[in-house]
Length: 213
Ligand code: ZN
Image 1 (cartoon, protein in one colour):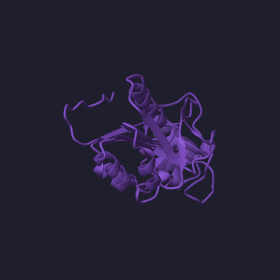
Image 2 (cartoon, rainbow, N blue to C red):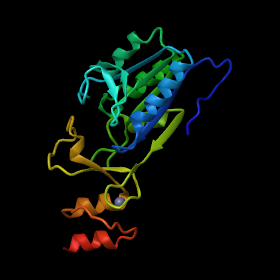
Image 3 (tube, rainbow, N blue to C red):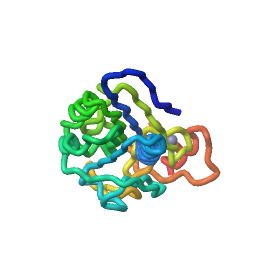
Image 4 (cartoon, protein in one colour):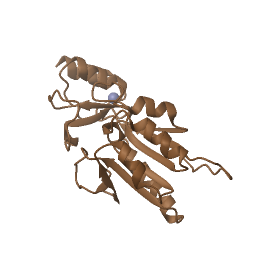
């Protein structure tokens, strides 16, 4: 589990990135860190892109619906003018911020802020998502969280889209995705995929069998 670094006399802040697939607990981890800072009496603020409209307009809400008050922003650079009094700045759904996100995070860290950024590292095609690769490069700390593969139960790293919409962004459509491991993600991308029903097999046999049917 990630524990907060404590640098006495440090003259700048730092960037913590939390990345992973859908349903991997990124937002839960973000909320956990923000709550700990809040309990310690630190001034905490959290922001998200305006395009993230699921569940609630002004809250950062994880899939289990634990909310943290948040401010929607049209673009990442707006956050600079809003954080003067904050010690800890959280950014959720960071993949939907623009290409200026890494630079903004570096600016915040230079201002002495602890910056915690959560976002999808890959899109539904398994490709790096928006500003996330560059953000991961400039972050001091990276935590990659994993979901459970909805097909085989192994650790999942990919977000597989079960709906046929060609757009990269399908807002508020969590049920159009499922978390998958690399193997099941690849198999699903090649052939129409049917869910492997119980009893689940740990080997590939069940998956192959369903693909043949
Ligand atoms: Zn799998």
